[in-house]
Length: 231
Image (cartoon, rainbow, N blue to C red; front, side, top):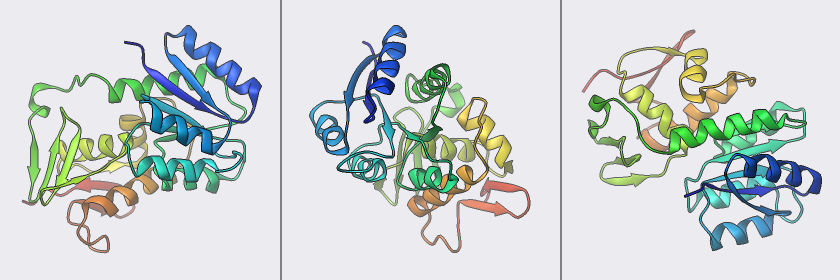
């Protein structure tokens, strides 16, 4: 069955270009031109990915993203026309998995979508990584892509789950920001290291009992991060 993508932008020429390019790749597309229409369509039909502009009429993209995250972990790629990096980081703060700056190359958009679809599609992890992983009261199921903490379900975005799986299957190994971008984002990333820090902070807020004293994801000052090797 073809993957379904919701395209959200108030510029008709951008929607037309995205629709043509993605349908040529075999995706099914739907579109919305403002934030309210995007939410209406999201709640009416399931989608495999959402391409979401930040600057939208009625409701902006960050608010749309935040509302979607209250109900779903569907991958979200933010589109931003602004040059200020803080807009991109803000999008990630609200739960986006990735961002692409305008003007963008349609081939780049296609590559980013393919990368996310691969990560959220059929699991092809090695056999040893398919078992449920438990560390203290944290439980990660790589097959179902679910996480529980103290028996309670924790909702993670696709990127947050990929980061957690990378860490927990390599306990004690320190990852630099560059290594995390190469391992989790899996393409020629053009953003900056703050993208990693934003995702780490959001992940800690969801799985750590006290973010001021992390038990699971530990900072190696001047180097990067690692998952505790202490049971």
